[in-house]
Length: 315
Image 1 (cartoon, helix red, strand yellow):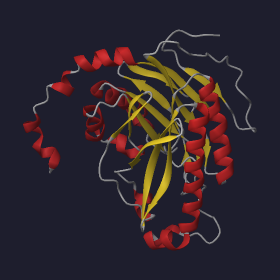
Image 2 (tube, rainbow, N blue to C red; image 1 turned 120 degrees about the vertical axis):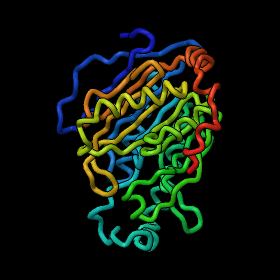
Image 3 (cartoon, rainbow, N blue to C red; image 1 turned 60 degrees about the vertical axis):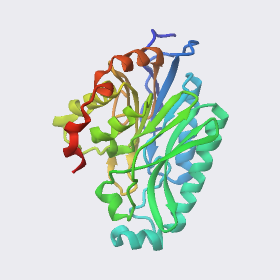
Image 4 (cartoon, rainbow, N blue to C red; image 1 turned 30 degrees about the horizontal axis):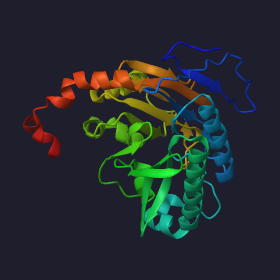
């Protein structure tokens, strides 16, 4: 069954212990060159490395089968849950990470990069996924963007959360965009999306699509749930871009219970989202680049800024 342009596509993949949804799948594909399909992968995370890779591969294949050419995986999608693992104690902070987790990080990151490169090439897509990057003696939460098997760029997370600082990770130093076959792609890793200045920088660089791999916690304040969702539309509207948010379900690397909350946002609204926080599946939606280009030309906040009035932002 084929849906109207702009309608979201949803594939449900429930864990075996839950009933599988029988809701019909709406396929959204287009032959227009200025119309692409973006996809957000909501998958179970926190398992063993190869189990995580296997699930990610299956869901990315599903997304590619729907015609998706820009796909985002959740933050730390391939990392196992570290809390409770034998001989691993994160209470020591940076020293613990260097001394105990070095081999684990290298193994997971190397296998993850190999996976991203191979699947991106095999499916002919732009694929974004996170690794813990090791650079000399430093560790970064880094999102790699592969375009048909070629590394388009790496974006390090700038605004770390408390647990990442405890683990000894270092912050990235800025933002950039990458030229790909689907347009200019930027990345805001998880909490980076909360800072409007970060998204504005990518907007000024001409980002067409912003990938936002996230970890969302089940205990987040429900009072602000609707506001958090509308924030994505605001970011997309202000900066004339599409945003693909991908979240995992299961357990974080520090053992916290997660909620997916994956969605795709356009300047005119949320065009696709998961039916529930614990659903496993693919959210897919068309992205009209011709309309985006027109809206960007009309966006006065990008081209008519009085920069001299914003000096407080640099303090």
